[in-house]
Image 1 (cartoon, helix red, strand yellow):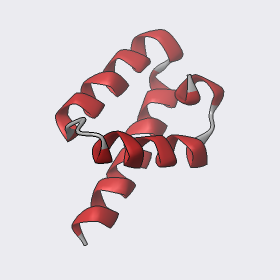
Image 2 (tube, rainbow, N blue to C red):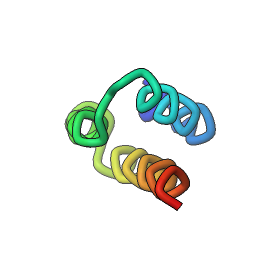
Image 3 (cartoon, rainbow, N blue to C red):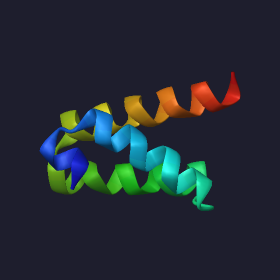
Image 4 (cartoon, rainbow, N blue to C red):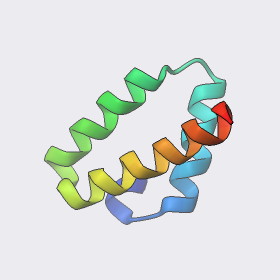
Amino acid sequence: MLTALGKPNELKLHVRGALTNGVTREEISEIFLQTAIYCGVPAALEAFKIAREVFNELDG
C-alpha cells in the first residue's frame, strides 16, 4: 500500500520494522517484486531503492 501511494518515508520505517520482526531481506524483495505487477514498475523500483537504503544502513 505504501508503495502504491508513493510514501517512501513510511515505507522505510516499515521495512526496518519488518526486518526487526523477522522478515528476511529475500522476503522483502519478493514482496516488492509483486508490487511491480500491481503498482507499476516505477513504484516498485522506488520501493527496492528504499529497501536497499535500509539494508545499507543496517550493514554499515
